[in-house]
Image (cartoon, helix red, strand yellow):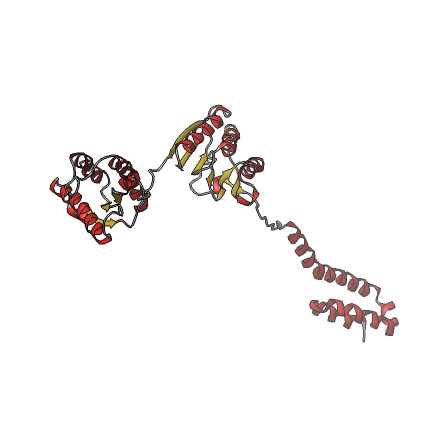
Length: 348
């Protein structure tokens, strides 16, 4: 094979230039006579090989440069909340709330620094203990200025420390106001809330306050409580009855003194509309047991009849004769027997 033929092969197939170089070396070794005869042809071949190598390497060099010039993509994971990104929260807003009740303290809302958050959490833990504090505060970045915000946190911190027991309230601070709403169990607890609020505002210049803590009306009394209240009045009336002669001797007719005391019953029933009054007659043990039972029944009923005639609703009255079965003193003496001959009014 001649050097001229090899030159034609190399220039005719540029995609196999590297293989052509190997073939050239092999040809030079086996045909040295032709190479020495045509030095000009060899130089031409070497020049073509250099150009071919540049063509092969150039795309790779250009690709590496382009890759180096491309911008590098980076990722970021934010761990703070920008106040400007929060819905319906102006960048100047700070809203932190402490919900205080017998179950503990729940902290919620926004503060501007971790230090503010720590201050509120520490105040709550000192007030009720760590186990009864729930911290849901968020630290918001991007708030325009901290001026005034520290006052709001200081005011809320002071209020948490000073608030009394017996309240179910929410205290919310903004940049210039501390607002308290809720209920206090009684007037003393409500007064304690007002004192704590006054102290908190005094320690934070420029802060204002609103206090809408109320003392709810007491629950309605139970039936037992209503009966007890009415019985207290009837017991006082029974003491007066014990000092009077209620019936004439061998008669069921109430005496004038007895009627005057019975006249207090209609007013009592008006003031205690949920109760009824039972009138119970008692005797001493003189005479037969059956006779005493009948006499006590008749005397109790005579008192009811008098009240009905006076205008009392019969459905709110009842009578019972106890006879000699419920003595309150000995029947061995005159005074004892007099005490046992009585009438009692009971709330039912």
